[in-house]
Image (cartoon, rainbow, N blue to C red):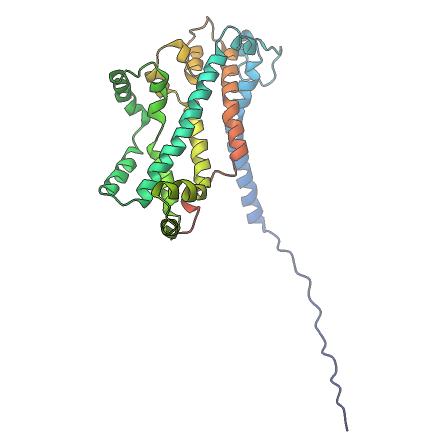
Length: 298
């Protein structure tokens, strides 16, 4: 009996993978892209750095060398005046209260309206949504005078209610939430209905938690908009005790609290009022997303 033994197959040695190297044109393109991005970043950051530096200068130095980044004499006089001669804490308290109420109200009402336009079937739904779309391109300044007249007729002028109620919902917020709810499968609503959930319970306990990315985006935009708002607060109030940070800083810029340019005082107020919004954006910067792509279409 003859046994045939096959010779082991020779395996060809693997060639080491060559690392792909970028060509000269690709490197030049990447370098130019980085330079452009750095230039754009500096164009946005540089004015803020100037504001911080000037807030620690004296009035005379800020006038003579407004663009200098290193103060010759570092002084905290501007910040001391903000919390002494200027009712800055009152402005900050009013702004924080109004921004908190407006943000919570917008998140609730805009999401509720967006869910109704997305999931509820009723007559005139397309017309209502078209009306929201039609409002979006209208500049906010166009609506200031009509808003002022309405607040006067309703007796809400120069009150906290007149400063808060008109801001509790926006067409942009409704549009954002409606588009996100459209991306959630309809089967979710049908399954909840089979389980006996009411319309509001389906919205509140099932659909709304799924819209967390859109809610976070709306939360950030609403807080920023109400914190930095100026036009509405000019036409909705008159009393100094109802000043917000924006209207208060505007009074500093107009020179109502003293003579001279008061550059350090104005810039110190601007720097302090920028900090909360900047912190909010740094904390939630990864959550700001495209709200139309949060879920698969059903």
